[in-house]
Image (tube, rainbow, N blue to C red):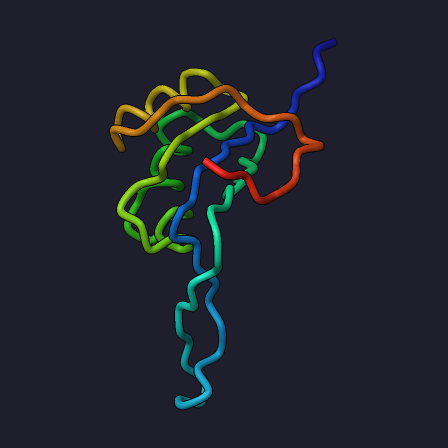
Length: 109
């Protein structure tokens, strides 16, 4: 019996942001830049199909737009080679191999 593991995608994020409460607008939110070059990690639920995963990450309200002010990541890596290739082709960015899970969250690159 094969053990299924979730697909993991890593995105090189040079304009990472966090969404925080707006101190000037009760109930409002603002996007605040985070310092440095970061890696955004996306863990997809088991059974997510290729095109569903791509849409969840790249779509207008997708993961990338929620975590970055850059138009595209600097690079893409994934435990699913087909998804990594699709995303890298979509964005026109570097394709990398997935990194060791023990690596720190901040990755220069």
